[in-house]
Image 1 (cartoon, rainbow, N blue to C red):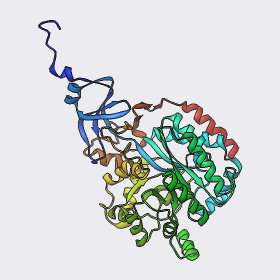
Image 2 (cartoon, protein in one colour):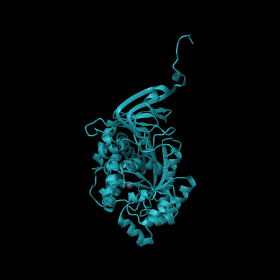
Image 3 (cartoon, rainbow, N blue to C red):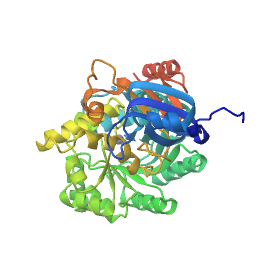
Image 4 (cartoon, protein in one colour):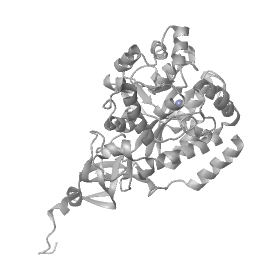
Length: 448
Ligand SMILES: [Zn+2]
C-alpha cells in the first residue's frame, strides 16, 4: 500500500453482494410493520440483511443496486389455494351454486378437454397473472401436475403441487389408487426441484370415500407429505355428512386419521365449535378463500374465531373458474372487510392480520415458513415491489393499511424469487406474455 493513501475503515469490512434494493418502505412481516429509509441486501438468492441506508453504504458493495423510493417492498404473496389450469375456464359459468356449477359446467368440460396441453397452457396463464400480481408461490390442486409444474418453473414461481385424489374416473385416472400412483410418480420425477413441494390432495370429504382417505393418510405419513382438501365449503356438505356418518366433515376426517399439523383445510366455511377446537388442538391450517365463498354463496368462514383460537390462516383465490381473479390483494381486502361485516367488529381482522395471512400464514400452512413468507436474513429473497407513487396511494401514513385497503395488484412493478427478477417494471422476464395470451385465445375457441 502506498504511504499517504487513507483507506476508509469500513472498506476493509465491505461485503460483496448480488443485490441491494433501496425502497421507501420495507415490510419484513415478522413483525408486521414498515421500515422507512432501509435497504434490502440479497446474496446467493437469500436475504442477507435489512439495514439503514447508511449501514448499507458502509457495509455492502452490491453488483446490482435498484432504487425504488416510492415503493414498498414486502415478501412474495403466497396464494394458498389454486387450480391454476382452470384459468382457461375463467368466466365460463358464473352465478351458479357449487354442485350445479361442478356437475353441469366444470366436470363435463374437464372430462372432454383436460390433458397435459390444457393444464400446461392454463397454468402458464395463471402463473403469469399471479406473478404480475405479486404472488411468488401457490398451492395448486389439479390433474397432470407435471404439466403445471413445468409452467410454474418456467415462469419463475414456487409451487406446492397438490396431487389430486378422487373416487370417480376422469381422463387422468380410473380410481383412487390410480390417482395416488400417478401423483406419486410426478413427485418422484420432480422432488429434487428446489422451487417445488408436494401434498396429497383428496378433492373433498364428499368426493372421496373412507378407503381412499385411509390410503391417503398412510402415504402421507410414510412420505411426510401434507394433506390438503376442500372442507366444509357449504352448509349442505355438512348436513349430508352428519346424515351419513353422524359426524361433521372434519370430525369424519379426524376419525380417519387425516388431521394434524400437516393438515390443510381449504374454505372451512361451516365449522362448529368442536371443529374449531379440533383444529386448534391438532395444529391444522385453514385456507380462507373469501371471493370464491362469496361468489358461490357458500357463506362466511369464521376467520376471527379461528385466529382468536390460535389457528394458522392463509389466503387463497381458488381457481379462476369460480373467483374469477387470482388476486391476493383483492382477497386480503375482502377477508378484512368480510370479517367485519360478519361480526360487527371493525378490529376483528385488521390489515396487519390480512397481510400476515397472505404471506407468512400461507407459508406456514404449506410448511415453507422456514424458507419464505417473511423478509429475514437467511430466508429466500422472494420480494415484491409495490408502487405507492400514484394518485390512489398518496399520502401514505401506514403502508400496511395501504396494501390491504388502498392499492391493488395493478401497483406491483417488480418481483424477485430467490433473488432472480422475474417481473421487471411490469414485464415478465422468463416467459413471453404474448404467446401465453395467444394460447389462451386458441383454447377459448375450442371450449366455447
Ligand atoms: Zn378449490
